[in-house]
Length: 127
Image 1 (cartoon, one colour):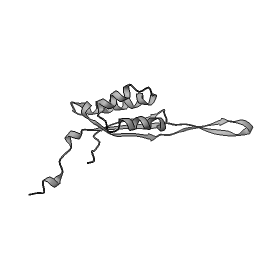
Image 2 (cartoon, rainbow, N blue to C red):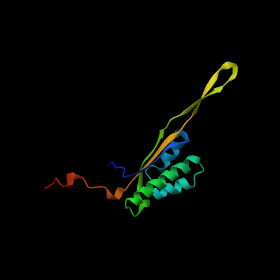
Image 3 (cartoon, rainbow, N blue to C red):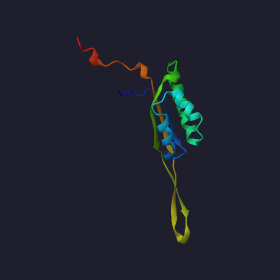
Image 4 (spheres, rainbow, N blue to C red):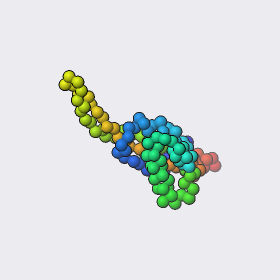
């Protein structure tokens, strides 16, 4: 059963590395929206605040489109992709230089209602 993503929110060009976000995104993927919000609320990470804002936005998008119980939606898509990097050179000893990469990320949260999954058409073929 593959659930399609119905309500999406994105935070693009977030000033944090994707490597710091992915473990937090793995925690909330597959959870109910209310449970995911509770998990993120009590985490001390800066990335958890960013993901929490994106989740709130996705829940608000669902509420705007007429869903009454947004807490019953399930986080089916919690994705963190790498964004552009600011590249700088840091001078080092003996005339060498190291590359400094200021990384950014794109955060995407997708919610869907698993209770409103349509029935298969194979049930109707049995006449």
